[in-house]
Image (cartoon, rainbow, N blue to C red):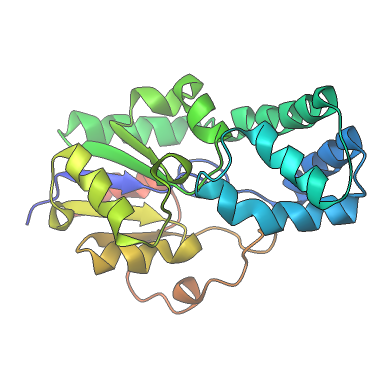
Amino acid sequence: MPCRAFIFDLFGTLVNGFTRQDYDQVNAQMAAAVRVPYTEFWRLMGETYRDSCLGRYNTYEDLVADVCARAGVQAHLTRIAQATAFHFEFIAKAIVPEPEVLETLDILKKRGLRLGLISDCAPAVPMLFPKSPLSRLIDVPVFSCEERIKKPSSPIYHRTCQRLQIVPQECIYVGDGSSQELTGAAAVGMRPVLKRIDLSDVYDSHRPEVEGWRGLAINEIKELCDMRF
């Protein structure tokens, strides 16, 4: 089938990924704000990450409050709000792409292609996404915390395709290989493309499907414009 759409991962694909060096600094700021020892805060943030991505907290403040409770700390609402603000400030900057990414998406749209997005993420991302330059180019953004499912579960891919009004076989999925997203995309009939990134400073540096990848791969998003699908 001819290609009618592209669906992209967000972090590590359309925007820079979460590096430990950068986000650990945010964790330190948040931990200090709520007066939880940093190592304990860091551990509990990792422990609650999946629940956050699956929408099991109504707000990010609820997540921070739960982390505090698990640490045995009674944090005042103003301190929780301050910690949350550090996270939101980081995410707002993180979801701004490089100009060449916007240029590439613009080219693809002018060719008549539909563009989708699937991101495993906490509530801050969908809240702030409308302010990102990406929002004017992505036709269908899908966020795990809103859908309450995450990659590589088949329903999140199928829902995105349905909203794009295509079938999976008409779609290219582009991602950096986190969360087994490429094999998940292939399992529903999409054609996956690996976006290679530096894995030396990410939280999930061990990605088996990336290490053994034999399919199509790119180093920069702009390479998609010259590929034939």
